[in-house]
Image (cartoon, rainbow, N blue to C red):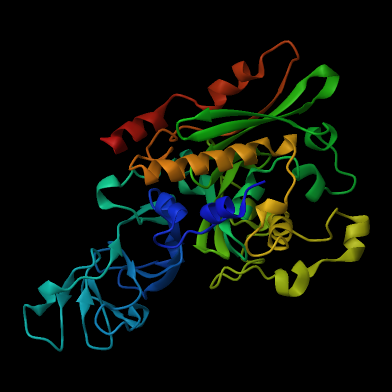
Length: 415
C-alpha cells in the first residue's frame, strides 16, 4: 500500500507536478496517424497530462503540436485555418508554423509577429503513431523505436481507447498477470495459463525498467514461463497467442487516460480482426472512432449480461480489454492505494511503483530517469515451457533481448 502523499505523487501529472515532470521526459503517444491523414487537413484537439493542445499537419507534411489557445486573446487554435505551412487563428489572423513561431499577422504591422510565439512541442511519426515530447528541449530522448514499430505495416496493428480512470490503475492492470485466467476466464477453456495455478513472480530490474516472469506449473513437472517487459514509464510488452502485443497507458488528465494497444508479428501479416483490435474489444465495432470512448462503458454498466456470466464467461462482459476497463473504472477515478492489500502475485506492481518513485527523485535531483534513452529497442516478450532441470532464464534471455537488425537501427537513431 501507499500513503496518501505517495499516491498523490504518482497519480497527478499536470504541469509542475513531480510525476508530470517525470512523464514529460519521455516520448508520448499522442495521435493515430490517420487522425491527421493529409497535408493541410483539419487540426485535431489533443489532451495530454492535463494540457489542452492542438495538432496539425502542414502543407509540407510536417507535424505541429502546440497549446490550444492563441497567445493573443486565447481563442482556440482548433478553429484555425490550416494553410500555407501554418495554422492561422480565425479571430485576428495570427499564424504559427509547426515550431510555434508566429509568421504572419493580419491586424498588426509587419515585424510585430517576431515578438510572439506559441508554446509548442516536437512531433515524430513512428509505427502509425504521432508522438510528442513535452519535456526540456535539451533533454529530448532518442525516438521511440520499439520493436513493433519496425516491422512492415501489415504485420502490426494499433488502436486506442479512452478509459475513465487515472493512468496508474490502468497501467498496473496491464502489469497484473495473475488476474488473466480469472477475470478473462471462459467456461470450458483449457490451457497452461488456466491450469497452472497461482503464479510465482520474479522481477529483474534493468536500465530501461524491468522484465518480469510469471512462473506456473506446466505438464509433467515442467515450468510454464511467461516473460513480460516493462519499459519506463508506462509501457507493457507481452507475448500472446495472436502475436506479441502490449499497451501504453497515457494520462489525459488525472481522472482519464488513453490506453494504446498494439500487436505485431515478425514474419507474417497479422489477421485483420487482431490488427484492428476487435479481438480484445478495442476495434471500430466496440469503440467510437471520433471520441475513442468504448460503447460498453461505466454509464451502461459495460453492458454486463448476467446470463452470460452464469454460462459463458466469468464476468458477463464481452471483450478482454473491456473486462479490464470495467474492473479498473469501478475502483474510482483515482484509486486510494492506502486501502489496498497486496500479495506475492503483485510483486511486479510493487516494483513498478518503486521505479516510478525512483524516477521522481532522479528528476527532482536533476538527473535522467530510468529508461529515458534507447536501450529498449530490441526487448520483447516471450513464453515457453521449460524442463524442470533447465534454468528458465537460459531459455528466455536470448528471446527477450535478441541481437540483430533492430539494434543497428537503434544505433543509427542515437547517432
